[in-house]
Length: 453
Image (cartoon, rainbow, N blue to C red; front, side, top):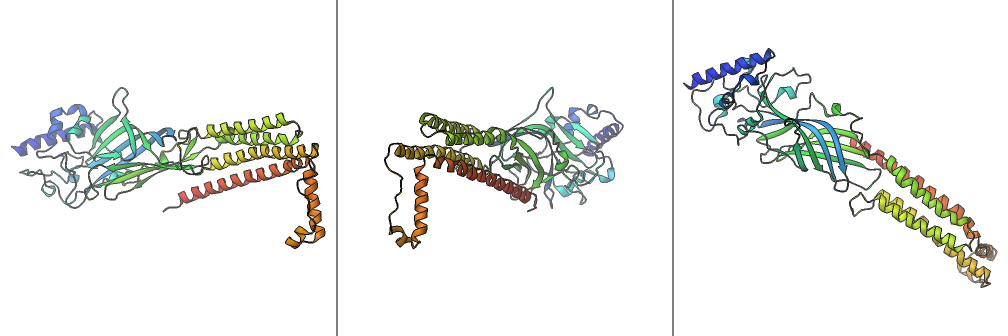
């Protein structure tokens, strides 16, 4: 009786597959009862369909649609993608297109034991490898679309996003997912269009010339690697071929690299790696150019007369306050980190130069006040014979140095004249060295990322 029931069911499914091959809609030719009967007795949906000698292999494929947002303050990024995974289940009694490829349930066993035993229903030619994911140019596979509720009756991988914060499947007119059975080799495919928000440990040492490496980790929740293995179905769908430079050029970042890796250890795992490079144009216009102009503006006090105290003090204090506000605006979207960023070095150096310009005026005003009020001819008076004996320097040379130093402090504009040369020379030397070092470190980081580990 059991053989007759299975024979009738097998014939009806085979007819449906042949109709699909002729271009007809297969899913309309099968009733819900027919789907239910494809799951044999004693089927345990909580047990993975591993064989006696090899684990079940789950193949993942992901087509990246868009990177919707990157939140540096929360250290998260969001993506939209098509996520697909495929696997084989030898316990399901599905007919294939070619009978000679039917290694399980051919013929069906006369008696079914509990639980199902692999060697009772399958021959030694069965493999959990899906050749469609291994071939460079696979044939167009024929498939039967199954009701998505069919997942409640069969085993499915318990994959989850290890660094995921939240994820959802899109639903427009209908839910954007489907379940299919491929009649060429008997594998099952679950396809979903998903929005995923993932955590990423950003490194801001070189901010705003940084390069961030973020990952999407997919891991099994309960199965270990001796039972379930994860692999990328990428022999025919490489990650690099799925990038569109126009789509993945974000306002502040560009997607420089997108690749897939396998990270099976105790638990099966695969990951997608995203390398994001920040665009420096925004900070060039909104950080570097304004701060350079503020520093140059503070130097204008060197050309203002020493007795114009309100003008020079107002210019110095205004420059410091403007620089502090600029510093706060440049880092407001970043999390509070405990290390020094490249932007911190830039902003602190600019603030030091602005403060030094104000401090320079206090020294100039002090010299000007002593000179105009006749409180001394200079700050340093040479002591005859004393320094030459201690330092071992000839008296004539020491006298020349002392007189030059004395004359320098006598003039109330000499310090301003020296500052007009010293401040720009040292500051633009710092600017040149800053960008040379940052550019070199960024190129070195990109080169090390390209070298295979």
